[in-house]
Length: 306
Length: 306
Image (tube, rainbow over all chains, first blue to last red; front, top):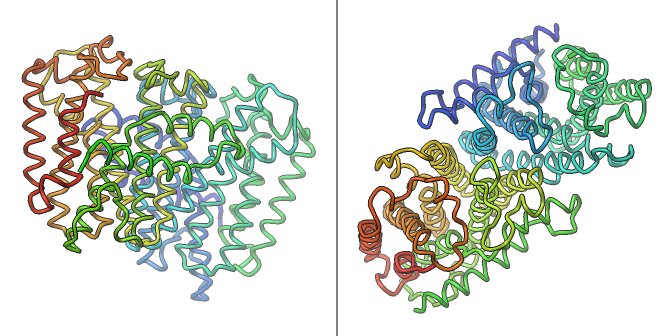
């Protein structure tokens, strides 16, 4: 399978779904819906929701002992496809809200996001705060609309925990507290596993749950999610310095944020990424091995240049 | 029944539950949990969660054709009591988050909340933004922990809608847009029914749902919730000017916010409150009439001096 093609096809699938699930721009009060859409449709890679689709596909396909159909993750198990897409979009909304609030002057104070004015530069601070709030709120509304209320509830529990002070917000808090402090390896580990890792891991988990994965499969997927979540963030730190495509944002360097590079240096950071990816793909033997989306996505995370 | 005693007893019940459901102050990262608790335990009246308990009690007691036990709303239907208390607390967390974000410099810029420094004055803007986010997120986590997943899902749907851009956030957005504009009755109506009314109405609804109310009962309760929700906000506008107890906040006047008084004047505003309360209590005949908590709470909202 061609991973670049797979990511592109699925990002389009997610974008189409997001467009359907987010209130239209002309819905009253329109400014907030415009701000929400502006913050979501910003050329993001959609890596989190794609992980949900890939985990869903992997678990489901294994059950039916059928080969994976490249680029069509939702061809099988169509009755669950809509719910999976909806939950995957909810994850993306939470990711988008976290970026809108992160960019605010009181936090990272970033004027640009992917080369465009950040939400508060475009719509003002008040609307950016409310747009973030609205995206977070809408994520839980979306989840509640799935066909299976029991499953919705489980997903709501997993996602709210991953986004909480024991997950993403906790990582963000410690990140702020560590600014301009001496590099500290355990604190850094906490930030990376929580700020980015928790939601990436939840993305994999909910795909597995919706795909009907067993508790044992879920445990493996969770481990996989933790490994690639951490690798993703270390890779982000590396790209921040090596200036990968689209990385205009540099507030992290200005504020002397704690990064993998400041603690371990670039060589060791790169080695750690490769080790994490290696461990993650080793978990996938029972799920079809090297020609599966989760395998290729892990490799992509390790190798990505943007 | 003595409404003041009823409100006091139930506010204590809610406070005890909130204390149990919000992460402790010393839980890492502790600053965010301190900020969350600071924003929730601020001497609030707990009118929203009390409405949930009262609606739950009313519907449940009617079913059992038993008299209401003053001051002990959870004496009956004990198996549902915990879930109701949890959902009621979730509503209060959402109310608390909305106040934290409302007080921010980019929004109402209020330094004081109930006579104490507002969250951002105490913990800084970054932590206040994140504490608001965390309270909202935690509300949905709490809801997911109820014993009946199907019911949790319905409550999550209702609350997320009430708090969304079609409810509370929508009201807040239009409130901001209307600052320093000419008074406009339809816009004012939208702001009041959405910014405050939607969540108050949802509080009544979820109590009714958890109490096992029929769809017909739910329709009556929803109407009741809409009426008292609007009355509550008009009364707030009146107290803002007449300077009721604890109303130190006056940013609304400084910014020339759209209020009932600016559109209708004080006499007509007071008349409208009494009419709304009158309509609300007229709906309660089939629920036990004038000696029930919902009746007394409606009266209290109309008469309150703080």
